[in-house]
Structure formats: structure tokens, C-alpha cells
Length: 137
Image 1 (cartoon, rainbow, N blue to C red):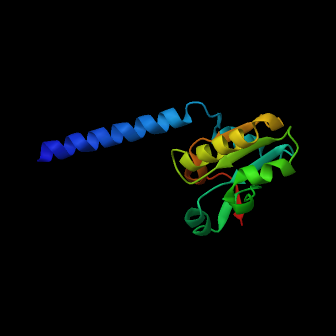
Image 2: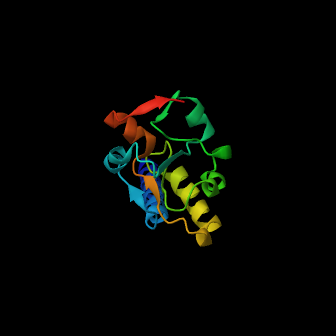
């Protein structure tokens, strides 16, 4: 019985890892160091797409980030010029929420000319661990 459980756990974890890798393979990523070096740039827009429970359980956000209308970055995108650089971040260390949001934006705005769209690699947790700039919401 113990061996069957171990095999099932191995299959589950392997499947989850492969799914996450495949899901993020075609999504542009930006490292926390790259984003930190861009803070204060007027052509930068940082979207906080953390899920409601994650967002509301913290009183902090990445410095300069905005919360999109209804937590859907795609709805707020058209209010910004196309030449801006957009970064999405969430709480998941595997960036699932950010990746899902970015894919939604790409589908909804494919023909609109928005091309500088990225997901923050490591998300909110990695940003906090690094001690990078945050601010009160």
C-alpha cells in the first residue's frame, strides 16, 4: 500500500510540474532584478493580479503597482498607451495566475498592438524574499 501511494504521489507531482512548465513555456518572463531596475520608469505598468484572498491578506504591494479593475489586467490595458511595458505578478511561485491573466490579455488584445507584456518570475513571494521595494496599498 505504501508503494502504491508513493507511485501515485510521484505521478501527481510529475504531472503538475510538467503542466506548469508547458503552461509557462510560451509566456515572456521578467526577473525580479530586471523589474527592480525598471522601477520609476514612466513607461512601466505593474499589475497586481494576486487572487482576492492573497491580495486582501496583505497590506503591501510592489512599489508603483496597480490593481486592475476586477483583478483582470485585460480590462485595464486599453487605458494605457501601447508602447508601455506591462508586468503582471501574483502570489503563486509558479506564476499560474499571472500566466493565465497574460494569456487572457494576449487573446483579448492580440490585434491591439500591445507587445511588451511580461510575467514576474517568482511572483510576489520572491519579491518579498529579496527585500525589494514595497508600499502600502
